[in-house]
Length: 257
Image 1 (cartoon, one colour):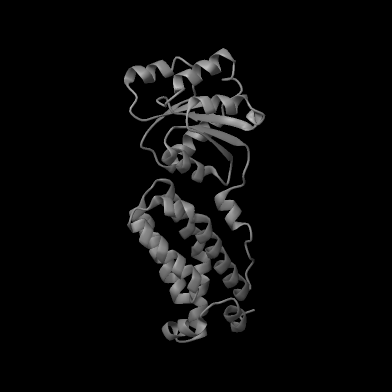
Image 2 (tube, helix red, strand yellow):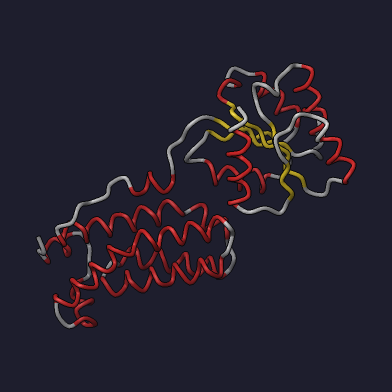
């Protein structure tokens, strides 16, 4: 194809880019490198996001910003710059909240480049990297910060039900959507009805065979942890944790369904 008008009509500032590259031959070669490298770069961003490594995330997104600026992808460059600032400020929630926006724009730019270069477009890149929503998991924690953090991780893969105390958790596992719940992450120390009371409810109502449970624990004592393992829980994860930790324990828990 290699029709410059196609790039321009899709918002690519080719004129500005040529101030750097000099001619279209060099621009095309660099654009091809971008297409070849973009998925690897997005994979690196995903990895550093999962482990909460914001310094390395900032380095990778800075490189994405630079590539986008050089090639005239103005919107992608602006988005990547915002992610660079936020990751340098360790604003993990911004990175989670806006992740799909960055990924979608990067995919759009890559497909513009692929079309221009006569390569096959990849329309499903975003869904492949984010995942498709499936069944439900239940997060029981009186910390909205923790619950919402977990929700953001899985919101594109599972329905995520949140209960801020044990009473609400019991309502949900007894309600009309209980059959959708494939696993539960349970905090032990909560107001009103605590985690041990939820575990006892599960035991008395034979729910462990229907909904596997793992514990997410903060300042619980050794005795509390030992007491929790008297119930048939799958695993225990101590706070603080990162995205990779959460994904591991959720998948392990659901595999016990």
